[in-house]
Image (spheres, chains in turn yellow, cyan):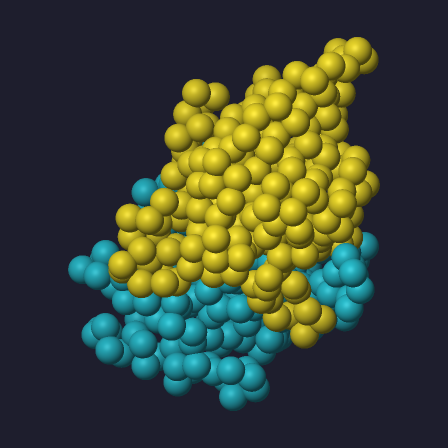
Length: 205
Length: 221
Ligand SMILES: [Zn+2]
């Protein structure tokens, strides 16, 4: 059922490196605010009534025939159900190819000394557990505010974000959703401007 | 021993593959597509396309690349291919062919994950959204790609046409071969470097890929 009366249902700060599991009802609007700029917000969406019906990065990219996400992007599941639509965006584009950091990939990328640094995969597992989201249910996520240019020659790089303090992105839920959020703690590459910072979550439903 | 199998167009197939074996896919007609999911034999550690791409600074799969798992291990290495671009950004055709194959192994919808569309190319435009366009005449009959399993694997292949193609499905031959010799860890690394074709612009694997190969060998040992 689509909720029509909207009130401020959510207003919270997610500290740098922390996460959240938010239930957004159909029709609800969730805004993620990059309070200090250059902060990657790793996000997964699940149908709240069937978590196997989950966000699919590569189905979403294919269906919109473009790599980056922005206003109008339909976020679809592996069943091609529309989970949500990006309805406002003051940043301009968001990544869904770069995935999440994990302790294991940190070791590969930055060496053994990073093994026990905090990572998005840990946050996803920690906050996802109460919704039954385990390792099998994780998939390739959205990185709101992150800049991962893909080039015509097939190259891919990580660059400084296009975001700035106060920029925000808003999604409107097309069905009842779980939004699983990791406010990325990565300090080994420029995805967070080398300095992870808090974000704000605002919800209307 | 060698195992050869021909997967007809619009079909799905799966097989366990032992560490060290090579998997050669051959396009049997123009416009072939072989969508592949790769899962470790623990049935949980899957091919992770973003980690594979980030570690090797590439948005396409090409010879010399290591295909990495969620846990940062090498699953397979692309040791040779007649094509230097295999799509990995646009997913499988949503026809559930792979899902049925997954179910045979006790897996399911939760295991539909990032895949490689071997023989297919989706061109990336130089515009603000990085728009995509399927390249219809990319693969031809006789094109090949050879992977080496870096650990024991389950592989899943669908020969449905690429999801953005309006062409017809084509058959793909699969050949699984045992290692030519008992490989020492040093051989593995040499093999990757030597068999990387010269047309790859940067034949040196990035440090992360070499580290994934080393960790995988330690895991198997
Ligand atoms: Zn992260």
